Amino acid sequence: MSDDIDLKKHIRSIPDFPKPGILFYDISTLLAHAQAWHATIERMAEQVRVHKPDILAGIESRGFLLAAPLALALGTGFVMLRKQGKLPGTTVRHTYALEYGTDTIEIQQDAVTRGMRVVLVDDLLATGGTMAAAATLLEQVGGIVPAAACVIELTFLEGRKRLKMPVETLLQYDS
Image (cartoon, rainbow, N blue to C red; front, top):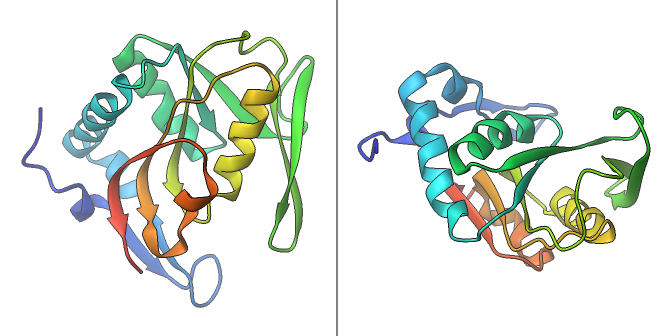
């Protein structure tokens, strides 16, 4: 494993994006660096493996970038949680509150069978709202959510407190 790679050196910080006062942690530069990207997937696989997932669920859209190669590394399948109207076929949806309004995520009705252990995957844990909604949706279709995994956690936003399951993260930022 590539223990000597400092992943934080491959995360670009972009001030005032998407609006003034926000510091955006961009994983694009991590994805572009082959060794750092490989180390990311290896490290996440090590963290997630202990939760014994049957399948991984990636949250649109950067969660897809992580969940697909992570599923390959773990020998599991991968399902997508998407915004309303983006998945073909019969879907199950969950609408949840945002700071200003609501959002809806969906999963294909037959993507998860009752009792499957589904680990949620996204690039970043901020306030925890989307992750909590994703867990609720997975439980609604019969999945068991033993854990969630992200590359980055913004600890100062305390998103972990909104979640019922443990969260595995590789990098933490305090501001």
